[in-house]
Amino acid sequence: MAEDQMAAMVQTRADPQTGQPLSALGFGCMRFPRTLSGGIDAAKTERLVVEAVRRGVNYFDTAYVYGDSEETLGGILEKNNLRGKVNIATKLPVFGCRKPEDFERIFSEQLARLRTDHIDYYLIHNLGAVGTWERLRGLGVERWIADKKASGQIGRIGFSFHGSKANFLELLEIYPWEFVQIQYNYLNPMDQAGVEGLRAIAAKGLAAIIMEPLLGGKLANPNKKTAAAFTESTHPGWPPAEWALRWLLNQPEVTVILSGMNAMDQLHGNLQASREAAPGHLSETDSTAFSKARKCFAEASRVGCTGCGYCMPCPKGVNIPGCFTAYNISYGASYADGMKNYLMTVGVSDPDHYAGVRNCVNCGVCAKKCPQSIAIPRELRRARWRLDFPFLMPAVRLAVGLMGRRRRGGKAAV
Image 1: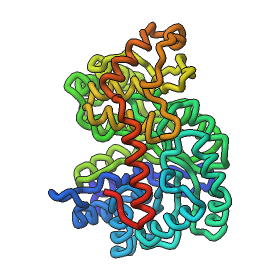
Image 2 (image 1 turned 90 degrees about the vertical axis):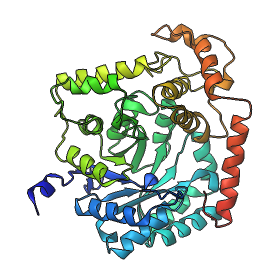
Image 3 (image 1 turned 120 degrees about the vertical axis):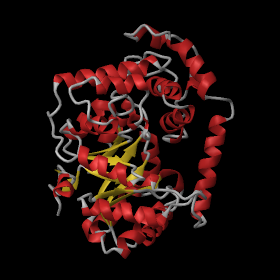
């Protein structure tokens, strides 16, 4: 193998419980390359997957609701005889499970799509609150999981999470999970589960799988001021995406970073970044660059919320840090990204317990506890005008219900 190819082989990190080597760079399969008509470009995707495996990537993350992602991945792995070289991670959609037999129906469909007889890493998708888990438990999910693990059809069981830190810490203790997937990046290290959640995962000896390391690609293409914070550092040659990945790999608690790569240059760049970045490899000067980058991004934001969580819990259940993060993203990145973050954090993660700005009753309890002296009720009203509207959550619940019914009918979601 040529020297440049050897240099781009990915490093591995051990699953803390099993010792199994997992590639520090994982392949997020939600953003496979697309054709002009909007479908997955099978040929481009195959080249990416095959090249990724050749370079040592052995963790591929997909989900039941990612359109044709499972089927595409399964076909590529079978065609190229790669199944034995990779770990497949996929997810059980919470909204699609309304009766006990739904677990088996969905799982069987996933096995068929993925052309496999087992799932290495299986997740409860976007588990947002204890109440949701209790509903699944009432349907018999724990017994079903135990049966699947005993048969070898499920290797490791975990959950993915978008929601409040308090909910995350509760969920972490409610079941003997074997790995966890959280959203985490240098821009919002206190958002959702945050750094406290990451450390809690590590304290339990679990693998931590990181999603959205580049915030949907936004950290790979930051605004000029944010980019300047890195180019003026001691490593001006590192591209923005590399800085983001290195920030994560600098933390020993991180096991796998999922990147939704849809072009060969993205794959090669991420492989190069993750080749040898190890815990403790960043300097104090590098840490200063990240602080400057956050400050530059904050200047394009509207609320100076640090995500510390001192304002929580809200008496009315509002996920205040989550709402402000989404609000800031809607200005600092794009409105679409802000709305996506808002829905995932306060709506879709637990549709039965809405945690959005519409719940605010202007009691002011939060503002008294805020170390940044933010007029929280006033800013929540502004966030409401930006992100929420009267029919938002009814529309979300309707869409979730329709998707669940379509899935039960055996049709793929669009």
